[in-house]
Amino acid sequence: MRYDVAIVGAGITGQAHAYAFLKRGKTVALIDSRASLAGQNLASLGLIRPAAQPPALYPLALKSRKIWLAVIEAAGLWHKPCGSLLLVQTPEELRVIEEFTVRAAGQDVVTSIIDPVRAAEICKPMQSDNLYGALWSPADIGIDPADADQAITRLELPGLDLKLGLEIMGLTKGGVDTEEGLITSDIVLDCRPPDEHLGSTLVTFGFSHQIDWNLNTAVTTGAALTSDPAFRICKSRCRQADNETEMAPTICALPDNLVLIGHSESAVQRLGTILDMSKVQAIGTKTCPHVSVYDQPYIRAEIDGVWRVFADSGSELTLAFGVADETADLLL
Image 1 (spheres, rainbow, N blue to C red):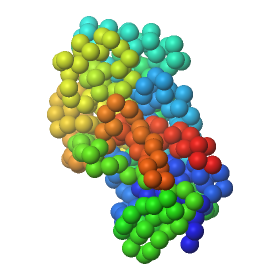
Image 2 (image 1 turned 135 degrees about the horizontal axis):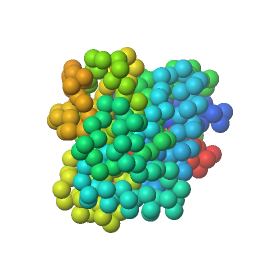
Image 3 (image 1 turned 90 degrees about the vertical axis):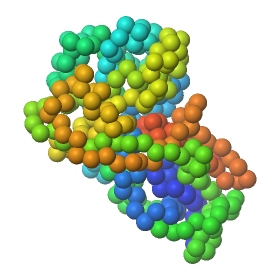
Image 4 (image 1 turned 120 degrees about the vertical axis):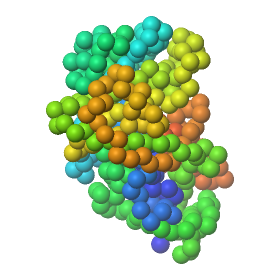
């Protein structure tokens, strides 16, 4: 069968591109060698984070967020417009977020610095004694990563042919060669990350024992100042980067009082200096795929008639629908 578009890789980026072309009336074959899509997106912790992206991409992130909300509503997915707090514990970290708010404001990035008392009002379990302040990002949205893995497939959109568990032999300008034969199409997209960009990260699952713990926002620490691409515009970040090399621990709420914590086994202990973690029990960890694209949040390039599009794990959930919308406009 011939399709308008063949997409290899049914992760968030692949599904977002399928959605973009389907909304434009095209037929799409979405192909993946995996038999199931569940559990592939835990590395993002289920957070759509516009302000964590490079400020130049903030409008694209907001466009993606708007499309995400339409998908979430149509699919009936759980979500929480929670915002996020980046908690700073040193004068050096405070200087970075002060510089960021000045520089990012020129590109219309919506964030604000709040004092420890206000931060504790937003995040009830927080202990403000060890804080110098926090960066508040109101646009962030929490979704269940398990839902995100299968968001588009749940919509049952006309024109979509989902092909899972299909061995892929090769990609050409005119289609995708599979174990069942050639799937022909006018446009071919490869949304799988190359092996050289693929690694892994640990995510800790936890359970809040007390319903009144009331984690009503996502929380991360000053380590995000070196791991989040948004802060690369800050000169003061360079000095801070000498002291912080690990990815920032982040905690966010899920339905049924579950929480996700990333990105290392010691995340619970580090967050314990700021949050009352006595009400959270770590119940397990999982090694998840993690894509690193180094100096840019995503890559889109044509190679021998096949379009390669993939994103850094820290940006994929946030930017996928915006990037896909741009790709569809570019290729149609």
